Image 1: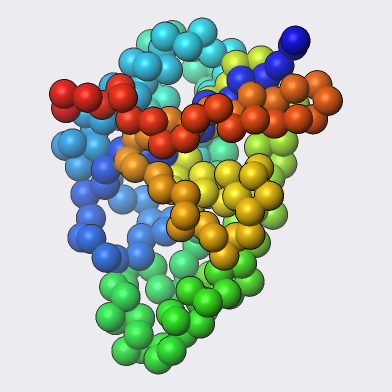
Image 2: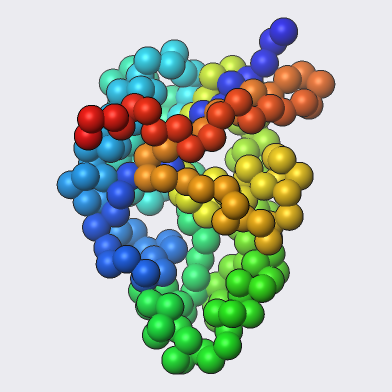
Amino acid sequence: MDRVVLYLLRHGEVDFPQGVFYGQMDIPLSNTGKKQSRLAAKRLDGLDLDFVVTSDLSRCTYVAESMKSLPLECIRREPALREINFGLWQGLSWKEIDEAWPGQMERRMNCLSSFRPPEGESLSDLWNRSRDVFSACLEGRFGKRVAIIAHGGINRVFMCRLLGMDLQNLFSLHQDYACFNRVDSYPDSVRVLRFANCTCHLEGL
């Protein structure tokens, strides 16, 4: 049966303090993250892809730029695939947010789908701005074998929608740095998650 095979990746480890919300900040990869990204690119090179769509933030584009099998015209940088915008919370730790906006972090965790940080996005907002890109890939507009390189939050939101899960259960879906997920999309609109959070390409790192 004819189908579209979509590989969904998360970027590599970042060089940034743990516990700080970086969202759409264009922060660099760590040295480990660069190694992870090159290994992810090597695996992508072996998948006979037609097209790659990547978030335009550098921690994602590094993977695409490390590939050797596709010409530049087959790689698309897409701002709609950026991580969630945390607004005024970006660059702050959980503690700093709780001190400046008492109770708001707890409120967000209790209502992940609709809560917006000040000047930021909710998870529903994230899905609404990215869904057309996912649809284009799943419907074969970029070819039958496509990869998306994105972020932990946006990957989880997509898989929640794919599996019919409530966005409140987002964190039940783990995404390691530089992990692979695969979705097969069939002409009758049936979509199957073949595997998730695969990191076998990183063994020995």
